[in-house]
Amino acid sequence: MLVDAIRLKSMPRDYRRSLPAFDYLADLRRFSFTRPVTIFVGDNGIGKSSLLAAMATDLGCSPKGGRMGDPEAILPVSPVACECTELIQRAYFLRAETHEYLLSREQSPEETGGRSTLPTQVDVQARSHGESVFDVLYERVDGAGVYILDEPESGLSVVRQLALIAEIAQAVDRGAQVFIATHSPILLGCPNADIVELNDTGFQRISFDEAEAVAATREFLEDPEGTINFILDPDAEDAEAEDAEAADTTVDGAERPE
Image (cartoon, rainbow, N blue to C red; front, side, top):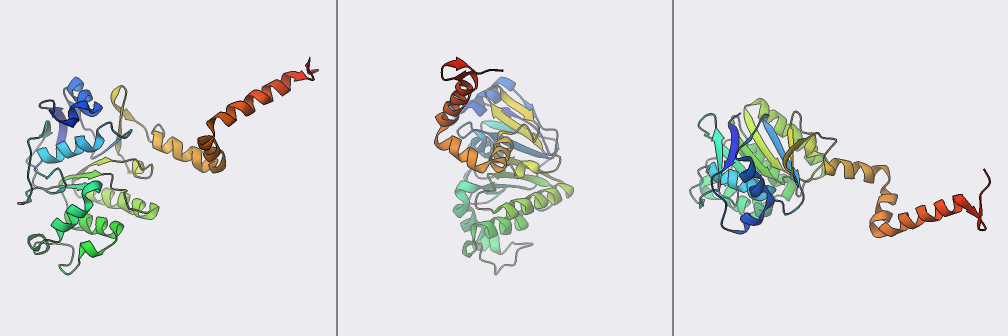
């Protein structure tokens, strides 16, 4: 592992103080990584994205996203320390909510002039969201390094998400370590990934089948109409069950014969 573990250096004094993820990390003191791909899952507002941003900042990436060592990046002091086994020479932070900022940086003269994979004439700002995500990944994910992807499924079709899994697997084969925060059940299928759920008990390693996103998606695909009906009228199912139970035990006020 390039990043062996994370620990909380100090509790943030801003909004992050109220996020459960930072409380959990404070209680743990240290959380170790065991696989080259770590995927964080959990409810909205629990602090997955903020945790990844803090990790990225400690590695020298802007909390808005971008590469390590970007001369335009403003790096605040990170409350999280990444414990590394060796000097990290390459890192990139892909953040869905600041995608337009990332593209503007990628299209700047200093960045286009230093491209090694993507042709210099490609204008990533003129591409679709999904295309530009892959453009950035093709250029930035290259060999040994730490790559932090915050909700990379945003704007990607199902097929593109499957393609992203392949890109991640190939990057790992070249020595990459990848951290992901996602709500996508598809990305949870990354080979040999360590899925870490942030829940009421803290940091909990779970299996693919135990992930809420996987269970909820399976339930919907097995019975889409029933699932939607339940969401629209959750009391209807209870009422139907009560009516069925009553009909099974009585006939015109008398017990149903055996």
